[in-house]
Image 1 (cartoon, rainbow, N blue to C red):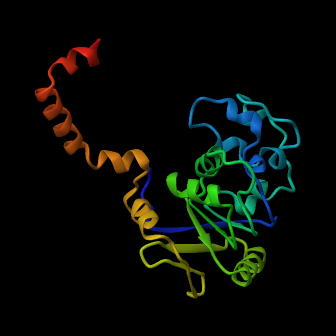
Image 2 (tube, rainbow, N blue to C red; image 1 turned 45 degrees about the horizontal axis):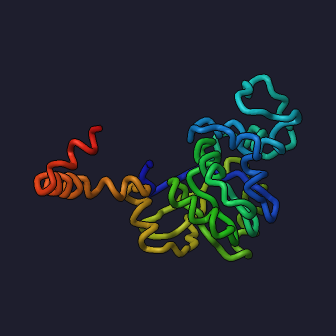
Length: 216
């Protein structure tokens, strides 16, 4: 996955509490056996006026002009501002896949559902918890100023507002390490590729008959 160090991006406001994973990526899109292609169906039931099914051409859909992500001022947003308990509901990992594939690198909210929160880190998204009063102020500023951007400094663990104000946030050390290095679970394992190869070679040297069993 892509490394996360410093990120500056346009902010889109998702002004709803308790946004669940079925709203983030509806259940009909979970049929895919691939981990790609979910971005066009992010928030599908809110984003479009017609019912969506896997494989549809997004250009043929009827977008909802009132939905935040369909508004021109938020085109290209990469930071999602949300309300409390974002990502509740089922544990589907497709939800952070859809957010990441749409283009979001960071989420800011007063709270997140636990499983969704963990899945974000595993897929290169930084979920940031800030006090509700700070989040409310950010919503006011995003609505008031078109083109509102935030800078996110993961090494220093601060969100930097346009006026230079810094909002500190907490992040668990191991999760921070993984994001800074761009390591998902597979990437963490591959850091030890040489040791794995050496172990396999040593085991086959001690038990050569395994080579025939493994290649059969």
